[in-house]
Amino acid sequence: MYEFIELGFEAITVAVNGAVLDKSFVGQKVDASFFERLPKGVDPCGENGEFHTFCYQGPIFKHPVPYKKGKTIGRTYPDPKGGNPVPYWFCDILSD
Picture 1: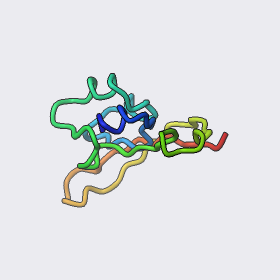
Picture 2 (picture 1 turned 90 degrees about the vertical axis):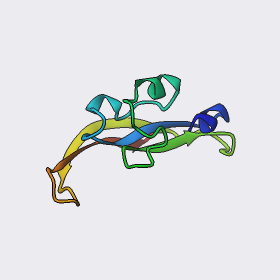
Picture 3 (picture 1 turned 135 degrees about the vertical axis):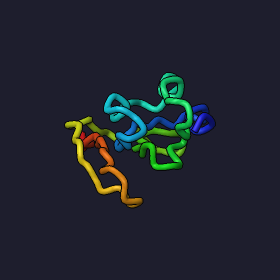
Picture 4 (picture 1 turned 30 degrees about the vertical axis):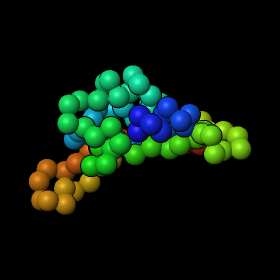
């Protein structure tokens, strides 16, 4: 992820696992300050399902993808391992 950012790609979080990260992480730009705020043990690439991103700009894009952040939506899903339900936060992405 650090190399991804260094190469000039830009992304925001669009889904956050509420069991690992709080609501404030959804809709945030993925940059150096984002990585600094991640709790210990959270993969900076989100490879363990901590978060998912939307990449809207980068060196391989002809132009940035225009978008607007919409509402933050919360949902709860059953834990596949049979534990407590897992909360998720989503950032609604709207075309610009």
